Image 1 (tube, rainbow, N blue to C red):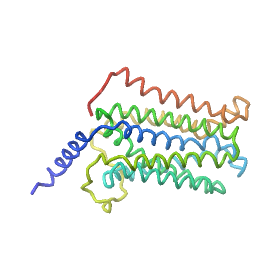
Image 2 (image 1 turned 180 degrees about the vertical axis):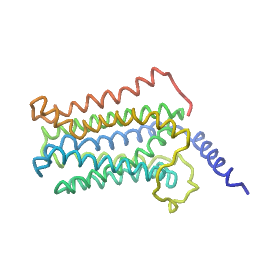
Image 3 (image 1 turned 60 degrees about the vertical axis):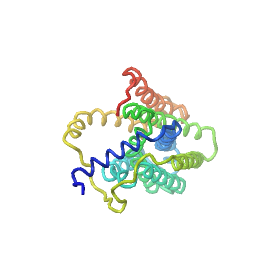
Image 4 (image 1 turned 45 degrees about the vertical axis):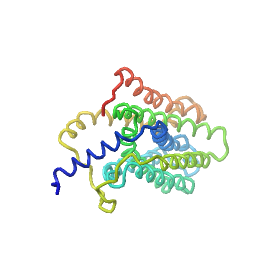
Length: 297
């Protein structure tokens, strides 16, 4: 009988063998990348709508900031407490679960009747993004042609940034030129999310069955090894500062741009988010090319 010390190593070897023998299909990799793009586009879509919500429910700048903070809180808490859920139900099922939660958030946005329900919709959306973030990176690395975690991370970062950029701009265009601007963005995103859910559902399993039953999962704080903790402490200030700037633009960027440019054109104001996040999406791909191909995990 294998000891408890050797069991995890053997399970890891079986998983690596399974992934290595699995036939590469580019469609699988780009399906997951597309899901990341759509979900992150959904996360920025409300940015161009805050002005309409302010007019409809008399929400001030502080209220808009708190509503955005609900989204951030949902994503962060999910990552901290449920970051290991993919180890129990697999990355594939976690992505499907995340898309289901995102779908519920769209219904909450459509049914929102005030600041409180809008904050709840953002909170649910943050939970869905947290679930996806914790599993999509691992899925992309496993589905990559060369099993390259760095190349997959570059695609993941690009899909995240470009999704945020185009989600805000698309929402701004709908506000300016389409009817029912508080309804149409979420209907379109719901359809795209459903297509993504179907695409991921038909991907052949890329992981072996987990040795940890789903019923054994419990919310718990993410635990780091000493080496990981050392790296985290070094990069945390940089990552925090970078995403703090992104959060500022997503929460207040459209309103600030409207004031500074003396315009009520939401599409034009949303271009600020496009510039910030657009270059953020291009940068990882350019850096990946400068480093040269990396085929190691």
